[in-house]
Amino acid sequence: MLSRIAESLYWIGRYVERAEDTSRIVDVHLSLLLEDPWAPEDVVCASLLSAMGHEPADSVGRAEVLDTLAWDATTPASVLGAVAAARENARRSREVISAELWENINVTWHEASRPGRRAHPHAFLTWVRERMATFNGVADSTLSRDEAWQFLVLGRSIERADMIARLAAARALAGPAGPSWVTLLQSCGAYQAFLRSARGSLDERRSAEFLLLDPLFPRSLRSALTRAERCLEDLAALHGPAQSNRTGSIGSQAQRVLGMIRSELEYAAPAELLEDVYEVMGRVQSSCSMASDAIAQRYFPHGVVLSWDAVS
Image (cartoon, rainbow, N blue to C red; front, side):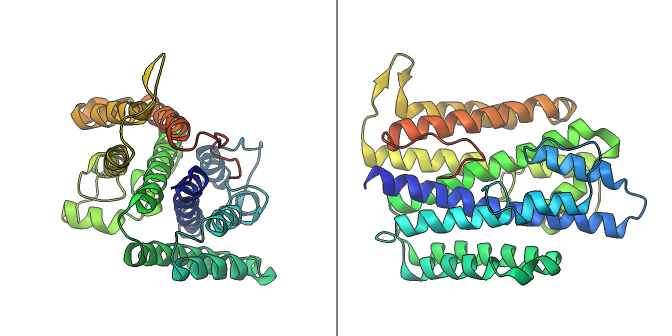
């Protein structure tokens, strides 16, 4: 497979996951403000913007959050921007994705760009979440489990791990004034699964452990890292021996950094991990960034390594 096609597939996975996660996160946090009139709006909104990589102003509210994280089409760090970036990368790789997959993301982009969407943010965010879930469903049912599939899922998994780490770090930084771990479960689509696992018992510690450490739930941090490792193993088997540099095998660098941080989460005592959440989540974000750089060096040698908020 050409490196430019592989790179586009990798970033399709990241941008689709980013659009879904951002729409879910923004919707849950804004619903929290409506349901709890005593929740400090400026603290909730500032915590959310900080988690998503933005420097909040002295006073922020719902309007600023929506402008920055939903409507800003100039950056893929927003919902609209992520949909546009996913569509552009899908256009570049139409020879390897199915016609149904292209039609899904193309229609989503055109519909999302309609001017009337701003009047109903909740309906828009719910619709985006459903469209991204449909995209993943179409991908699951129409793509062979070859290297194209592996690059798509690899991008999705790394983005998911990075997003969870951002939310957990912001939660730890905000302290008691920030959103609860239950709110974070809702933001990641994990609330119902957690209730079944915990048999209806709501507990902050168990909520945090489920979101970060559960090995069975596909949207937990540990599961996302494990899935990314498996994709890298399958790609390594397909592409043969990796090149080497002064620090060792380029192909194994991504597996090494992801494996190290996954092992730290898997074998650390949960109580110790939760006491040091902010620092651990910082290491998770750093590991995801280092892995993304190593993947680009190994499989996209002529591409430009992108930051989290750069356009592919």
